[in-house]
Length: 213
Image (cartoon, rainbow, N blue to C red; front, side, top):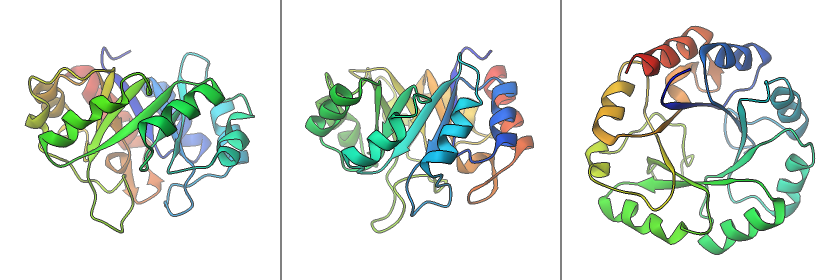
């Protein structure tokens, strides 16, 4: 098991879930957002999450979801955390955390150091911050293979547990960890052959690279 936590995100098949578990991923991410090529419905998410061993986290990734949508997913009992990747305010994050009694991760879109500093508003609301690259307006909020300037995280002590996302791959993840000190890395497009099509080989290579960092 890597000393750095690894979340493989956007999984949609039993084969890729199995590969991520075998490779040592600490968390599996399942996206419930119809606009994403990685979208899985509630039934499929339940089946995929239920197939994972209990020591591996199962995270539902949501974008400005309402309570009914969240209830449909959490009612299965298969999830261990919720990741909010939209414009959810600290108050909304806190409300979701209280109502659904699951740890809540909040993705923070980063372009400048000010974006990182502003994330302190989520202290007391979220359980983990996930720093991701800010995407162009009108596009998907993540999973586009974009990265931000990792040196922005240098000498930063986030107010919450945190992770790094955006543009990571087997080729650059060690550099990202070295520059940021990230205790968790989150990968999606970097383990794909095409948007939404995960590669077992790339999943294995990414996890192996992190373990060797």
